[in-house]
Length: 306
Image (cartoon, rainbow, N blue to C red; front, side, top):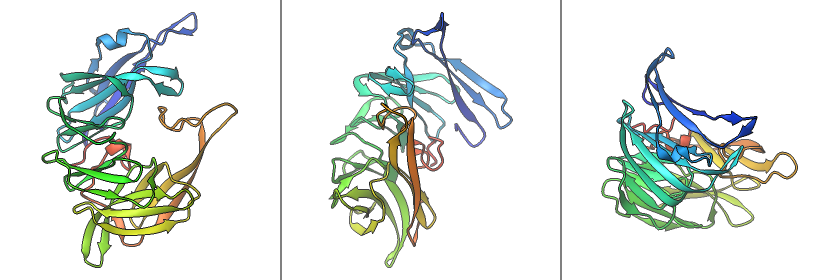
């Protein structure tokens, strides 16, 4: 979604020669209005698409000013797409004019998210300025599936460590060691009606190898808010916060003989079978301060909502 009234659609095309896929890909963008009428379009004419290595749009995000951010990376396997290294980042204006492009030869494909003038990539420790594309901060580890709220980016810096970055001045704010290992599920920011008043807390699922817990950390201070066991057989891989609880996806296993579980495929967890559940969390609800659209979360829009 580009705005409340406009939808950004990306199209991928290919040419088959005698029924054989040459792995060449072409891309175009079209902006549609509420009635589905095309408002403007652009053919992505860039040298990276002249190389037949199945370039793929692993990442897309839109900021509050409707600027567009794309990340293209070659694919080793086509269906589902499995990323190689060498990622080209693009930014376009709402009128589809190129703002900047940056290439990272070591970066694998991953989702993009943008908040408060900063651009994050799922597998990169580098934080870029949305205006220029230049690196303005380097995190202690890849951002992973982090989240932002109250001008603070929260991410897993290691297996058991939560870390933060101020989106105002790109300086670290706090770190907190959790009691167990973090899973792959994105962190979630929730509004907690505590005995001391409303608090925004970052929710993380952790495991000690046997039991799964939810550990909540106050976004503003890094203080431990609460921790509780949850009746899950393993760590979830996806979550969605709802009023009074959190939805989870877990138990993701391959369907068919010989298919490995592909966590970073596009689409993620393609050709797998999963279980779903809802965990009641009394007194918690989605936070209004959390950045909407990150990693295609509850809104699945990839659009910065504030």
